[in-house]
Length: 435
Image (cartoon, rainbow, N blue to C red; front, side, top):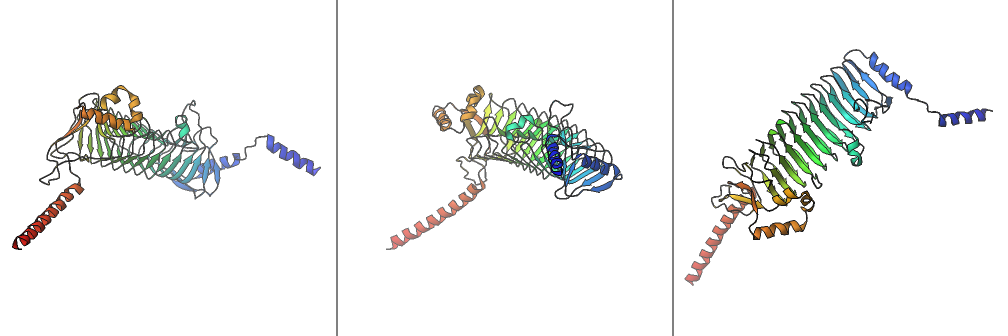
């Protein structure tokens, strides 16, 4: 008889869904509710079940191995209070539906002065969602999406909506729709993060006075997109391996007073793409081995390009749509183009202005399929044929093209070598005459 009961029990476990986590879920919310205002709740290294809501200032801290898992119907952790800290937690299992009243997240923040650090977020629509908040710190966060095959069906690593004066640093985001999405949010600082295998590593709209420094945008459809935003600083970021027929390292669209300073654009389909923008400054950047270093549509005007380095790009600069009203030098300083130049006075500036020319602007403007063939040898043949027939157009006029530092030192050594050679020849000739 006992064997029959055991068998029946096992059968019921197999066919009847039993929520074994209900007690743990109630327990975690109860522990949160019992924590005093501004108190600290320390969790054990085990799995806790959400969803949970925090309605008062407090700190929720776990150990290595602490997991909070949601039931995939809502936000795993919802913060409704100011002054909440989350630390050392793995968070998973938010609702994934896009037809619900809101898009759910691993962590949804609705209060000010929150701190989130040392979090790993997986299996969630958005990783972290800031909604109308101020002064949130996000540090050492890891968000992993569901994969590059389903970018359109999931949310962003971090979404910042109508939120200001937030700080994000030292975080890693991959395989989400957009790595960091910013909308209607001013005075945010985003430093030293890595964003990879996303649609856009950074997607940025209608937001002003923001700073992005020392971030890595690697292997995305688009590295970073700055749209409809003013007074932006992008400094010392790396835009690399952003490849695809229309991919780019950085796009600046319908924006002004964007300072693009000392960044690296390596191995992108297009390094920097500028459209319908004005009065932006592109300074001290390195464009290396891109198919197109800078693509500049003539709807963008009053830009200044100086002290940039163009090296081994298939096309250094491409102006599309007609003549442009932009400057490629300022106060006697131009750009380095990795092209043969003379500098007899050794002042580091070419003796003659440089006209960088190409015949591809019309091809790109009239046929988007041209982007598919930029790496083809046919493009080089097309350029060479148009060069021989003098049908190329000036893409950039640089009055003060820069010599590479190695070239300047090379001139000095060549000068010394010539002097030594002259002395040696003079010595042997005198010796021969005496004989």
